Structure formats: C-alpha cells, structure tokens
Image 1 (tube, one colour):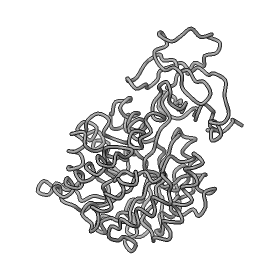
Image 2 (cartoon, one colour; image 1 turned 180 degrees about the vertical axis):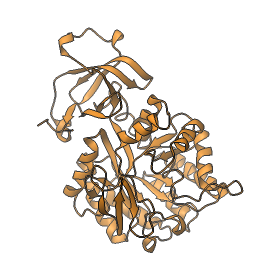
Image 3 (cartoon, rainbow, N blue to C red; image 1 turned 60 degrees about the vertical axis):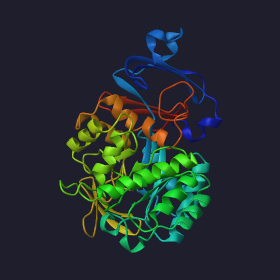
Length: 410
C-alpha cells in the first residue's frame, strides 16, 4: 500500500522527477519536467531548460498528462459520507479521501442550511479537520438564502441574515471559514456580508431571487467590504452560477447575467458545476467565453453519492434519490448536488464543452486557490508550491496522485 499523503509534510521524501506533457502556470507545456524535493516543488518548466539530471531518476509519464492537484471550493461529501450529516471528524475524513484519490488534493467542505445548533456542531468538527490539514476550509451554503430559490436546501431552516451568528461560527471555525453563500436581497444580508469580510471569509452570492440591479449592488457591497478588510480574496464569488438563481429572461435578466457581467469585468469569480448535469455543455462554453481570464472556478457541489452507486442518500435534513448518477430530492425532484469528482468536471468541460485544457485546469486549481488566498501554496505546478500532482491518461482519467510529494492510494 502506498504511503498516504496526510502525513507527508512531516515525512521528508527523496527527490522525484516527473517528465511529460504538463499544465503549468504559463499553459500546456508538451514536454515538461517537474522536480520535487520532500513536500515541495523545486522546478517546473520545459524539460529542455531543466538542470542536468540523471535520466535514470526521471519518471516518464508515458501517454499521460501532469496536472496540478485540484482544489474544490464547493463539496458536500463523497464516498457515502455527507459533511452536513456526519457527526464526527473521523467519518468526514472518508469523504475527503474519496475526492483526494481522484486528484482533489485540497477541498473546502460545504454545509447546508440547518439549525444554529447543527451548524455549530458541524463547524466544530470541520474546524478540527482544517487544523489537521485534511480540509482547506469550510463553506456555509446558507442559511441566509431565498426561500424561492432554495433548491436542495430545507426552507424551514432558512432565516434572515444574522451577523452575530456569522461571527460566532467564524470564531468556532478558528480561521477556517472560507466562504458563505448568501442571497443579497434577504433582510440582514448587508450585515452578513460585512461580518464575513471582517472575519476573513469570502461572500458568495447565490440561491437568489434578486433582480439584476439588486444582485449587482450586492456584488459591489461585497467587493467594498473585502477591500476594506483585506481578506483572503479581494473578489466575491457566485455560488454555482445559474443553479439556485432566478432564470434569465429577456425582460428580467436576473442574478446570473449580473454575475457573469461582473466576471467579465474581473470583479467576481463565478462557480460553475460543469458536470454535464447541472448545466448544458454549451452554457459552460458560453461562461468561459464571456468571463475574463481566471474568473471561473469549476466546482463539483458533490454530495455523499460521489464515487458511489445509485440509491438513497441524505443531504442535511432532506432525502435524496440518486438514479443514473443524478441526485434529486426525493420530494420535489430538485437537483440535490453532484456525484462527480472534480477531474470529471474538468474532463466534461474540455471534452463536451470544448473549453481549452489549460484554462479548465486553472479553473479547478489556481483560480480556487486564489479565492482561498492560498495561491502561494496550492493550485499550480510552480517552484515553492506544495507538491500536489495529478497524473492522468490522455482522456483525463486519474492514474496517480501525489499530495505534498507523497503518493495517495488511487
């Protein structure tokens, strides 16, 4: 069995050298060499410009691709485990490792709308995982959302914005609260946005029934709050663009076009669930065509069924049925999260939506790392970054995963 990566940062490893086509910060390099020493990357660039290395020490990624380890900003679970439902950190770790085995070397664990007591309990457990380095942060999807656009959220637990609750959860998280979804039109939303920026979290606008003007105003308020408090990112995000939002109409453009317009101006990062279920591939293609460079973050919105068979699951307090790999609420039929891993989303974006490979990979690695304020550690194959590497075949299916320079069992 391979040495697992969770202890890698404390276990020095010998030098390793990987050679093959690689997605580097400058784009796709057809013949690259990646040098790893211990837990970090010491060289990444064209093989022709690499320092002299004994060729017998170089691992040739024959017929494959070398990608940076992926970073998922929005993940509710996997491997049969749901972060909103698991009652202890040990159980939650199974979901983390399900995605890690498929190349997501950094993950933000997402909760859903729930009672204050339940949110406190789950945040406390996830904070322990963050301290242990198992998750990169916590995402609260609710509870300050639009009841009309709640999707797979329990409407009975949705409530008006409460800045005091935000501050209490942020304190409990101990710096691990990374993002929170809030509908900018709900009462108290402005105070919530301010509290998020103040505590170092990024406001993520979504599950919204706002009109275009109101949503645009919410983006501006979020940007201003982040500017004043100098948090982990200067830009707000949009929670899964188009999903959980008032639909686009030519006489009522709603929040989705407002978010996309902001992304085109470089003022917002938009999450996109490009799994072929949540959005038509042409919609994914349009988003990438219209948004400015590095303003799209590919996410999974994965729930417990990721990596699992069809069947009955839960997402928070709601029952979910998964059929044909599509998760829907047992009552009402709304899509209830994803069942894909992030590399599956990248593959669908490239092969079905026609997104440029390097741009799709950056959207699932460097862009989310920037949202987290962690681009100096994560999200790219560059010297000084943690040695998180995903080796795939030419069809972007995982073959090997390294986290902090150590092999992860696939």
